[in-house]
Length: 76
Image (tube, rainbow, N blue to C red; front, side, top):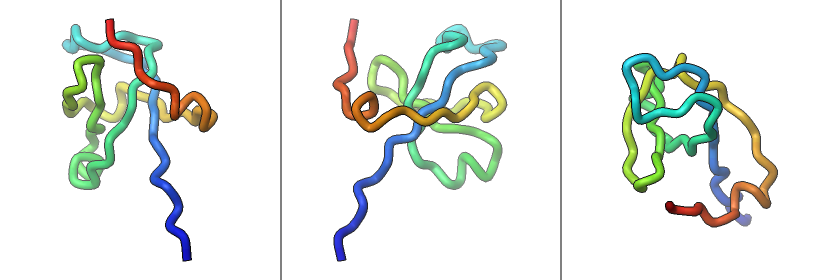
């Protein structure tokens, strides 16, 4: 049996209180972290390639088409 490739997860930021490094309405990749999610946080990958925990309430999960998920990130 073939294993299904892991789907990338994404969320859009809707709130950034006390988090100057988050941009509202920006899409972020969400990394899997069951413990963090159980505690009400999401592990978010930022532009630098580093991941940080943020309150889950700051994001809304979204679905991106596979082509968008596989597109290389642009670092500025």
